[in-house]
Image 1 (cartoon, helix red, strand yellow):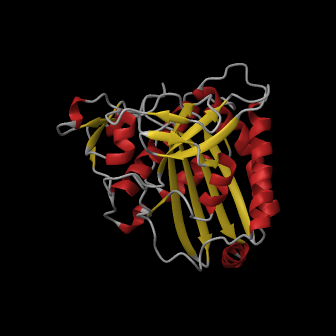
Image 2 (cartoon, one colour):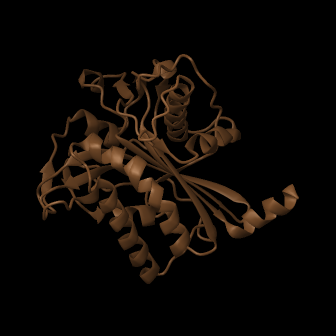
Length: 314
């Protein structure tokens, strides 16, 4: 089933444009940074890798982006949350399936360029795969695959204050906004490869994760979403803001409660989120990680826009 890029819009003049040499340099730098982030792991399960990406890898990513992509200033933040919210299917025949996790990792990109703001999102389900470039077959009725390829109407479960709220994401097919993150350990010792794969019952590595990040900030993959300030928004955009809010509140509440664990988050993630969503310290969201998703948040702003804002402040 081919994935549909339902997020296409007039972004040719607004997106970052790199030549092939710059892309390769950036991807190699990102790959080296990922390897450095995971080299000291003592456990090698999916959550361990996600934790390394969202807390270790994000520390070096802004320097890499700022060094390679001229004319832009980047900030990066991340948080690791082990327990993920579930999507409980409402209608038959899908309501007989187990409720899947919405994802293991959410990557968010906010770009401010030419005085316009654009958002991109990529949901990822992590899966260890020890077959080099091999294929993994998933039953057509698998609950996670069903979510990413059919998007049945669902309600949140184990999602704090969002429990019971319903979402119906369109289109009802796979898109570049929801993919698998394949973790391949069948390599020389201490070297793990990360690939991405489109959502399909035949999962096969299609691109290395480092190049996926490059494509993501160019809006060549992922699925754009819109600001909440626009009023009524589509359910994909609403779902992304839901996940952002849940995760930011989870970290915010834990910080207020004294759980200021540097291994849990990195960067001014909360500040970025609070500026763009109606996030408050919500006591309905418990501080035990119930409801939230691990996030890598990237923000890129053109230096021209930075200069304009600085002059306005002066």
